Length: 357
Image (tube, rainbow, N blue to C red; front, side):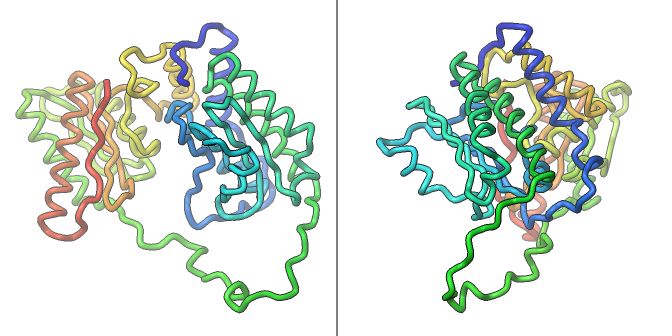
């Protein structure tokens, strides 16, 4: 299922407010307790059935990461194409929550049109049956309309309300561990789990190489463009405005680069891969862009930089058509990857994605 158009003002308002709340909700400001640190980023939405727009999933996943840390409860929402003849209990028994602990698990089966909300025993006292029913009903309301994006937005909103109560309620004690514990299980966790090591970072010289490659491609195409290169957090590393390029496009190039780096995907209208992007969905994203301080855009021309399966930055180009900007950005990235491969410093493991108009 995929949303082609949201037919009412109520749907637009619901979706817009959902996205805005994900960007602006003051989680950290209201918390007086330290957040639980995790060794790696966790995907709280695994959309195997491709029911939701990927950009919306990025928004919601970031918010659930914060909610999960504050409440100290693992959360996973997963979609599957089919249960393949299994019961819901059988399907759930084969799933393992990240980080392999008890928590909240929501399963949506696309073919059977089934949804199940499970909460493990240690958390039943704070996410009770009424909360579970509310989450289930919110998902069902959107799915019955054939609007999966509305379903996940409403469902997550009800889940958020339930999680906010967790910090005010004492969790039920977990079941005691068995008396006999194997020596392997008794080993302490390695200290390395407290930090993330061996990350790949984009150096200034690498950013400049991207600029050189992009400028060469722009010259070949007869374009005069602005080119911005940012790190994986969206911070500017290098910038160039070719002679004759429009100064105003400089801001656009930086925004494209930041969007590509922080959302880990190429910029462009949503839903991705459609020939006629949803105007109401993109209007909602524009509202979200305003809430983010102008650091988000759906314009073509922003491409993430990937090395060793890690997003290490983003490239944004402004001055040509959206398709031309994307071509120039990818040429800059290709120049970096080619030099890395030639010098055998770090062979690339992923090529830039192909822009889908």
